[in-house]
Length: 215
Length: 215
Image (cartoon, rainbow over all chains, first blue to last red):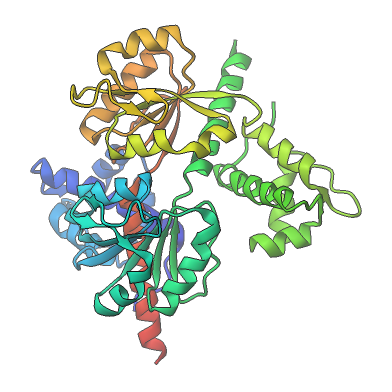
């Protein structure tokens, strides 16, 4: 197994993947760490350090082979395999995720969407029909479920996550404004939109202060 | 002006704000750093270090006054003021943001939503009517716009952001899968959903590997 990689490196890997995919789309098949550094606005040293966590990806004299590097990073991220995602909560955000086609091309297939609101059950969202929460248990038994996206109110999120853990689901994409506090054998990725907006607010205010002090 | 605070601290402030708000909702008006540490699963030392960036918030013998601390952190985050947010892109995600009521109670008011697609213009989304992109310039001239949320394809995002910069907008909540590369007098907060999902995928795979090696 690869050695323990810091979460900061893991957070950066998808960005490398994105840049390398864009280079491939442009027909660029070789790139030096200097050129990648220039495009990504990170130092070449940072890139080399990040890549060294995975053996360095064998840069040769002329640089990296873009396709090989992109596929290798994709493999590390698990993008070489199909992952089945269910969405819990068919509100605005759950529907937006279900309707977004971009996840599927990376191998994340939305295979089910659930809600407890009878007005939503039976509705078509993307390529799915909203199922009732009472059907969740039998669905998880009968289908592979790799990831559960939680787009439900924070009061319900931890309970639903614990129930899904009992059913064997181990990865949670949590959009609820709460911490799930799951055991170590679960993977959780939080998307706290209100908190992201607050960080932006802070940075915006401090821009203004800088500007006024500069005058 | 406060000294330069690290972005890691800024990212943690909204979480403190959330926990303190929840304590207030529960009627808890005093808390020690030890108890806050236990609830938030961070060390008391981390909490004290974070708070020391802002003068420490005057913990007394019995701990922090929850309401004072919450309001002080809120003030630092700019939550004591109203911020006007426009949404560029009335697709699924833009509509989900416009329909979500939770931002308004934190002082972020969605004051306009724009799209270039004639099928979307004129549609009611939340409390707004989708405006045509051609109306953006006059809208920004006639209204305060603090933040622009970009829920548009990546091919359009950098151009729209640059246009908005020219109009005087300085804060961007960017949901497009691209880096905006704006000058230093702009604040950008990225929400890259596909990348978040890739990080989750990595963490999920490495959970599985750990588990199988433990057997």
